Length: 226
View 1 (tube, one colour):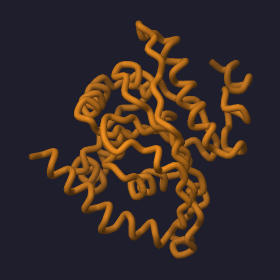
View 2 (tube, helix red, strand yellow):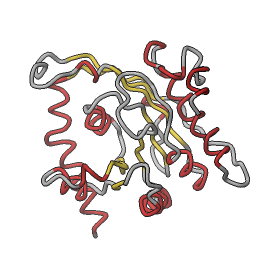
View 3 (spheres, helix red, strand yellow):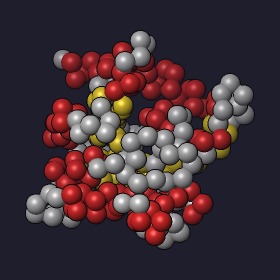
């Protein structure tokens, strides 16, 4: 019953205000939407440049997304209730939140789409390095990973741009699976994290790739900091 209520609440919000609001604020160029599997477990990964990324991705994605979101959002008086009612998963970032990992794995076992921003926070218009959580979950579950890239939302400033319909672009890549390492180690998680970010970087214009450079691989400067 709880799952059905969350599903109904999710789509009610998508259709009644999220999609209409997106139409007022943005013009959307969506590429590769045919790459989104129609059913089955899926880890949806994307860069995160702007606070506007989550609602825009919610509005255009054809399936319900179970987002992993920072705990602080759930502590907010109004939006915290909305996130809970939508079935999102709170994460205590940078703490190795085992409860959040278990909940995410359960969502995938039920055939859901798990939404994750691998960097763990907004990166200011250029890709940064991924936190280990996304790769860890992908390696533990073997679920396919769908890469996506979004840009243009970083130029939207409300209320200034309310009716300007700023152009925003979203590109979906092809699903893939991380290679099974046999035993999950820090090294295999690091390799998986770089692969996840490389796949996202390939979908972005070169000027947005940040630490992943023009080739989609981490730059020498980024490697020196690890």
